[in-house]
Length: 252
Image 1 (cartoon, rainbow, N blue to C red):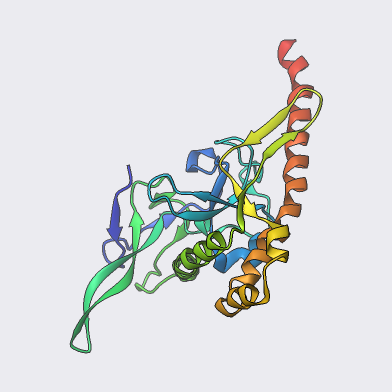
Image 2: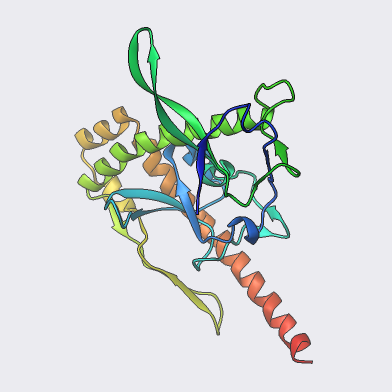
C-alpha cells in the first residue's frame, strides 16, 4: 500500500531510487497512462489508444506495452527497450500534490512533490540520490520535477482535448484482435482510437476549432502511433518463438 509523504531534504536526505527495470518494480504492465504533452515522443515508439476510466467515466489515453495485463514487451533483462520512457513510468515513486501556502499575503494551493516510501524502488542503499550532500536537488530529482510538470500539464490539457474529440465523434472503438501465427492470437478489449475517416470528413469550422485549441496535432499523432502495432506484434511473435524453442528443453 502506498505511503506518500511531502518530500523534503531533511527527512529524506538519504533517500535513493533504483532506476533499473523489472517485474519486482511493477514494470510488467500491459499499458500505462499517456499524456498529450508527450505524444510527439510516444508516437515514435508506442501505439496510443483511448479508454474510459472505470471510476470517473472520463476518457484517458494510454500507451500500449503488451497484449496481456502483465505483459510488457519493452521490458527485457532489466532494460526498457525504447528510446523514450513514458512519463508515467519515468516518474517512479513521485507525484505532484498540492499544499496551501501563503504567497504575497494570499493563501494559494501550490504544487509540491510527494514520494511513496513503500514503493519498491525506494531505499537508502542503492540507486540515484534524491538530494545532494549539502541538501540541494540532485540532477535526478530535477529530471523528475520536469517529468511531473509534463504530466500535470498534459493531464489538464488532455481532459478538454478528449472531450472535444468525443463531441465530434472522433473517438471510436478499436477491434484489437490479432492473429500472430497458426496457434496464437491476442485481443485487447476496451480500447478506442481516432477515426481517420471522420477526422478527414470534418468541416472547416470544426477543423479550425481543433487547430486553434491545439488539439488537431494530437489527433494526428495518435493516428501516426498506430504504425507501432507492427513492432509490438513482431516482438510478441519473437517471444513466442523463444518459448516454443525452450519447450523441448524443459520437457527433456
